[in-house]
Amino acid sequence: RNAIAAQASQFEALQAPLTAAAASPASVEQPAIDSALNAMAEVANARTAPPSSAQDLLGPSASAELLRAQADTYHHALRNILEPHMVALLEATMWRQIRDPDFMLGALKTYRMMTGLSQMDADYVQNWWVNDLPEFAPAAPFPTADAEEHQLAAIRRMAVDDSYIAPDQALVAEALKTVCTISLPARAYRQLLADPAVAGLKEWVPANFAGPNGAKVFARRSDKTLRVGISGAFTYSGFHDAILERVEDVAAQAALDRAVFAGGCSENAETSVSALSEDILKLYYEDYIAQWDSILRDIRLAPLADLNVASENLKDLSSADSALKRLLTAVVQETELTRSDEAPADNKAATKAGSK
Image: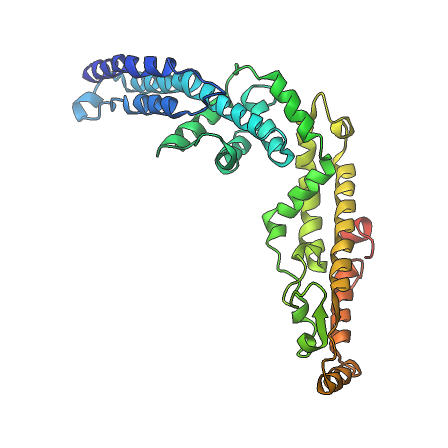
């Protein structure tokens, strides 16, 4: 009884901060969420601990009802105070970045889920909210120590909600126009290259293959050194061990994004995972050729500054193990993607790749 009375007193004390929060409605023009977060902190702190003494544990207990009342109050505050401010902050951010297609797809996906236009994927929304939103938001989304905790709780609550804040259809339409400026295969290809397993591949460095005389024999038209090379994504191992392993997963995820294109992006509206995978690989092959063509055009024989340099370089070039032969052999190893000596057992490359 004492715990219930104490909790009732705390709930009554919440009226003032909650009334103050209600007096500061969510606004796209004023998207700061500090007042809503302050109210959530008050609600979170207004919790009486359930009785735990031996005497209290004997006989009937109101602990379950007490905890349920606390949870209900917290969820009610999330729905009616914090979530409207979160949606307003997202809307303000989207209008601010309305011509940024790279930002807008993730924002539009999140907005659709938070307003009931698409099925909620709490893991996706939480990740986007924490990692992508803060850089672009016009007001800090996490100004207090517990701000992230409350907002992630709100997103989890949305996953089981049956009613949502109404979307701004004009915003959805404008965001869709921006999203549609980049084709689905192109966007999926960007996501493939940004995958940590692909982006983290070891760079192919010409100096590692040109031999001990490479730095003397070769120069770069761009004035780069031979230590500057090509992304590991565009190597034989990068293709077989990373690109082919992930392209279908990336295509499948991109295909799920079709819900975002409802009412727009007609060229993206209907596509299969297999067709999208092929389109992604076509872009990859084009990029692969361009990357290697660029570096090979950039590398040239170094100028022969004097007779000694000319003698040494010509001696190297005429040898059976010259820097030029070493470099070209290494290039062939990286660009002959269909060679069978190291091809994967399932022969994915034979069906998806063409020799570069």
